[in-house]
Every structure is written in structure tokens, then in C-alpha cells.
Length: 530
Image (cartoon, rainbow, N blue to C red; front, side, top):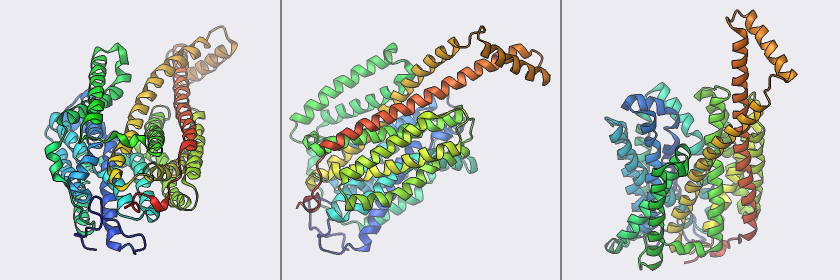
């Protein structure tokens, strides 16, 4: 397929409805999927290797956290710009620029000589690679006719859900068998391949470079400050005690001021950085809400379950990865099924079914004990994985499927931001709940450990006898210490159960949004509506 075709100049080149889709176009889109996978994977790939990176750059525990936080902040600032940049450069050129810059910055991350350089290059990596995710989502709707893009939507859904799940496991394996530098060098070959294949096989679009002269600098600065400060506040808020920290309060104020300026400029500027009018579309606004909840459950479960397995069970990274892989396998199995169901049935029905499965799966994790292991966690993981992929495909279809072609690129960026912010706010919410419920359950359990209770006396007597038989010098004191540790352990288990119940309630509440969604009309979808 010629890269110079111009059938649809204002958008990515769409194939006519009755025309056979050439294999080269599938290859080009697959290359975009590779870039999208790298961008999402790099959010979590350093999570399990923080200690090794910390030792490599001689950083403290608080400082090294910025290796991950910096990437997240830069990415969430860069994603909304993708719609504007797509108009300026065209989808093909924008993706190539983003993938190439992401690859170069990955090499620079691996070559970092100290903490400051690593954080700086990670911020660059997150910002320049941010456009790959919304560009790929937009390509699924604009490169292919509306009724024939379901395979591409399934691929996007699988990548968006699978990459965060396997990131920590893959990162731990790479660091253990090679070094932490390879966490970033892994991006080089896929990055080069993505750039070359997109250049060869994705049709060229006409850009509107004159828009660069009219860019709203004030709106751009306000958006960067708003999203950057918001991401930082929700990341650091739980540990700092929210309003107990003067720094958190100060950055909340900066975020509020920047938000007012940004919304004012977005509604008054002739050429806004981000077109917020897309939220007037009922399907997009509702889909963005569901997407934020999905982000909360997806990132929240990937965050909470490994913590439970590490703190309560004492599992290694490899053991945690084996349990977490269940949801990944379930997503692979559920992806094609979700696409087939969305193509054949009303996507609202598929979305509702997916949310029910997510709720059931997450509630299965809300009844864990200190003995819960692979067998007990298998079915909750599998059900949640299938449910997540069943929600991801129809949610994207419903949110973007009723929009005209020129608005898809901007809307896909906003949709991605909503999902990412849902995950960021959700994790901050879970951290806050963790601090609250852990303290509450410790107090409740400690109050019930009165020495006057026969059950407590019997347990201490048995424990003391076992310790005395084992030759422990002070068995009574050791038995009391074991009782205290048991109380802390049970309080921790109850706390994690509360966290998963909160996620289950969120996914159950999102089910209500399904009733206000409209079914997209395939004949008037984004690609067919020329």
C-alpha cells in the first residue's frame, strides 16, 4: 500500500468500507502495538527492581521513588498533547517521532551516571513516549473501517491490561539474570522495529504545521502544572498525611490555580491545546468514567496483591509473578472472546458482563487469609483477568465509536488520561485506606487479646510450651511476641481484604453507567463518517 495515499487528508488513511485491508497495513498497526506495549510496560517494569537501581545510583529510599514517579508525571502530561500533535504532524509522523525519541531516551536511562541523570532521562522517556498509546488507539479507529477494527481494539485491550500485570515480574527477572540497565535497553530493538515498520507500512497523513504558530503557551503551561502537580499530590499524599503536610497543601493550591487557568483557556482559546468539548458526547463522558474505574481496578489489583503476597506470605518476586501470571493468561484467552462478543452482540451487554466478572473476581480476593496461596487465588485472578479484558474492548468502542473522525485522536488521548488518572487516584485512595484500616484493625484485635480471656491464656500456654521444648531462653516473653506478630499479621490480612472490597464496590458502581450508554452505529462510526 502506498504511503503517499491521501484519501482522507485530515485523518489517518482509512481503507474504504468494501475494500480488502492489505497485509502491510496490519503489519504497520502491529508495529504501533509494539510501541504501545513498551510505553505501558515501562511504567511498572522498574517496580520490582527499585532496590537494585537504588544501589546502582547510590540513592536513598525516598529519592529512588522518583524513578517511577517522574515517568508517571511526565507521561500523564504528555498524553493529552497527542491530539493537538496529531493534527500538527499527522498520526504516522507523530508515532515515529514518539517511538524514536522513546528509544533514544531508553538508552540514555541505561547510561545514567547518577540519580539526577536517571530521573531526568526517565521524565524525558515518559513525556516523549506518551503519544504512542493514544496514537495507537486512534489508528484502530481511523486506519480501519468501523466494523472491521475489532481485532485491533482487542489487541489494544490486551496490551493495556497485560503490560501493567507482567511489568514487575519481567523487570525482576531481567534484573536478576542480567542487570537493571537492561530494563531500558530492552526497548532498543522493538523501538527501532516499530519506527521502521510504521514508516514503511502506515499511510502518510497531511499535517497542519501552521498550528504550531498558534499554540496556546499559557494553556500548555497550565495543563502541565495541573496534571503534574495532581499526579505528584496523589502519589505522595498518603505517605505525607495529606493535609498534615504543608508541602502537599501548597501543591494542591498550585494544582487548583492551574486547573482554573487551563479550563478557562481551553474554553476561550480559538486553538486550545486540548479540546474538552468532546466530553459533551454522552458516550465519551460515560466511557471515560468507566475507563477510570477500570484503571483503578487494574492498577490497584496489580499494586495490592503483590504487596499482600510479599508482606503476608513472604513470597519472592518469582513466586509473586507465577500467581500474577494467571490473570495475564486469562486476558490472552479472554481477548479474542471479548472481540467476538463485541462484534456479535451489543457492546453494552459485553461491558456489563465484564464488569460483573471483575466485581466477582475482586470480591474473591476480599476473603483472603494468611494461608491464601496459588490455589486459593487462582479463580479470583482468572475471573478478574477475563472480566478486565471484556470491559476494555467494548469501553473503547463505546467511548470513541460515536465520534466523528477529526475528534478521535484528541478523544483517545483524553480517554487514556482518564484511565491513567483513575489508576493513580485509585492507588492513592488504597494507600490511604491501608493506613486507616491497618490501624483500626490492630486496635480492634489488640482490644480482644485480654489476658483474662481463657482462649488467650490457652494459646499463650501452648506457644510457651512449644518454645520451651525448642530451648528458647525466655519462652513466655517469646510467646507474647508471637501473639503480637499474629495480631499484626491478621490486621494486615483484614486490611487487604478491605482494599479489594473497595475495588469491588467501585466496579459494581460502574455497572450503573452502562445504562446511560448509547450503542455505536457501525455504519456511522468514526471511520465511515467521512
